[in-house]
Image 1 (cartoon, one colour):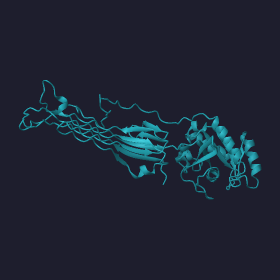
Image 2 (tube, rainbow, N blue to C red):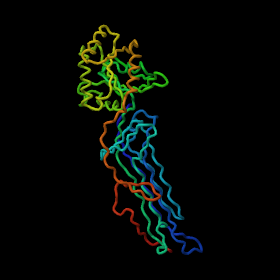
Image 3 (cartoon, one colour):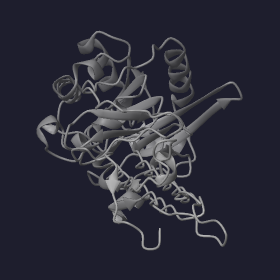
Image 4 (cartoon, one colour):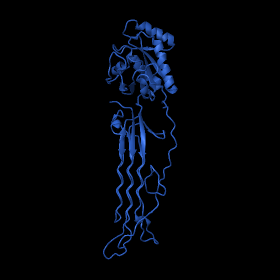
Length: 375
């Protein structure tokens, strides 16, 4: 199963409570306070990993919770810090806060990491409050709750070249011809139901990744067909390869088909429509394809390449054109909503940053305890 979108709930570990304890030892009548601090809660960390290609594993588990910090104990024993929870996602995943809508991080490269839920700080034990005037403190702190939020994960595959066109334009066949990818190929529309990636190696110094997305139809930007769900996967590409069928089976006009797809791109994202594009006429092994190619080039008024993925005709010329196009490309800019201002994070000396999910008034105020018998 391929999944490129998922919503998860993450909860960082709560901080452990500080302990109120006094030293009890023979011949030491006034041993003083020895309550240890609580441990900090574990954080929820999301990391990009090349071991994953989509978000299917995130769809199977919706709730993720890090380990809480242990409570402090007597004899100045500090609570153990909770272990961080690391969630791996494929490179190219965008993380958004579901409720606020701002972008938390765009994990483009393997190893990119972000803390999406900070663990709660552990509370101080009564040892922390001892002084020359307060030799038997009865104050201790509760641990702060860990941060929690709902996160929307959206995958935009990392590819250099994006194949676009109508269903049955030959995108999957071309991908299987120029790479080792094995996409599903059949003689009916919408064979491709999810993006396929293929790595093309021309020589040791020239290699690129090609993304084949489901075919587009008229009205795709409004939700018709399958392609609108995956147009975002070509937003990161630096070069678009627009495949136009020379002799459409439905006898439609190839020029009209090309302009219709261009219109859909412009309505989906003007920035995407401005990307460099190669127009390629496919299925040149059919009778009359040469005349159709000449007419398409004349009406569009631009250079048009011609290939046959079955016979291999024109593919070396296409690969060279892609190589040259990638050399001259500029880094594409993703079209994303601007991040909202994040809540301030208070950093205490010697402690981890902590942001409480549900702030409580005077949460850090010392807690008065009842007297200990025998003190």
